[in-house]
Length: 316
Image (tube, rainbow, N blue to C red; front, side, top):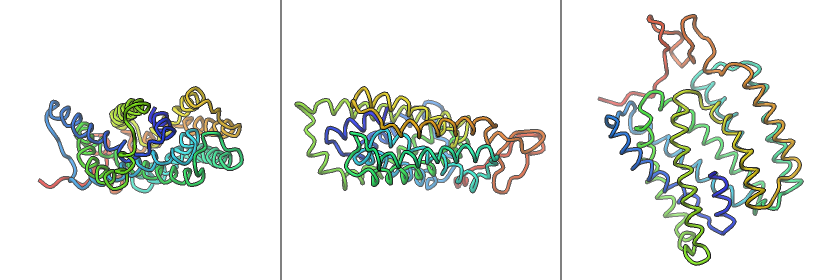
C-alpha cells in the first residue's frame, strides 16, 4: 500500500519523503499516547535514549525508502527489501544469538540470488516506470533495508519487554521532531511547490492514503513482533510483493520485465526452504522451554521460564 501511494505521488512530481513519514510519527505520538494512557499509562522499561535511537533508525529508513521511488521502479523497491531479511539474520545472530540451521542459510542465500537477478534486470531490461537513476535508487533501497533491519531487531526487543502502545508513542515522540527538522531542511521548497488544489487535489488523498496505510502497518508490526521475530516478519512481508506487482500493472500500466518473475521465483523458493524448519527463535535450547539464547543468558530459570533479553533498564 505505501509503495503504491509513494509511486503515484512521485509520478505526479511530489517529492517530500521526510514529510510523508513526519505525519505518521505525529499520529503515533498522539494516537499511540492516548491509547497507552487509556490502558494504564506509559510504562517505560528502558531509558529514553533507547527509544530515541530506534526512532532515528526508523526515520532515516522511511525517508530513504520513499526517496528511492524517485529513482527506480516500484517492483524493484518491493523486491529489494528482501535484503532486510539478510541484515535481520546477521543482527539477530550477533546481538540476540539466534541459532540458525543450514536450511535457514540456504533459503536466505537463494533469496539473495533473486535479489541479484532483480538488480540485473533493472540494468539490462529497465521497466517503463524505471525512474531517473535505477542503480542509485537500488542503492537507496539497500541502505534503507539495512536501517529497517536495525530498527526491526531493536523493536522486537522493545515490544517484548515493554507495553507496545508505550513503545509506539515513544517512537512517535522522538520520531516526529527528528523527521520534522529534516522535512523543514530538505522538503520545504518541494512542499511549497506542490499545488495542492486544482488538478493536483488528488495528491492530498494520496498523501492521506500513504499516512493511513503506514500508521496501520506500524500498529500491526508491533503486535506481530510480540509473537514472532524480526526475520520472519520481513519474510512474511515479501508476500506483499505480489500485490505490488498487481498495483503496478493496474495503476501504472507497466508490467514488470520478464526477469522480475525469475527473481520472484527464486525468492519464493528461498522462503519455502527457510520456513521448512522451525524459526530460529523457536529452536529448543533447553529441555524445559523454548528460548533464544541472549548474551549472558544460557538457560531457563529455576521455574522453567524462558530467560529473555531486555534493553537497559530505565533509572528509577
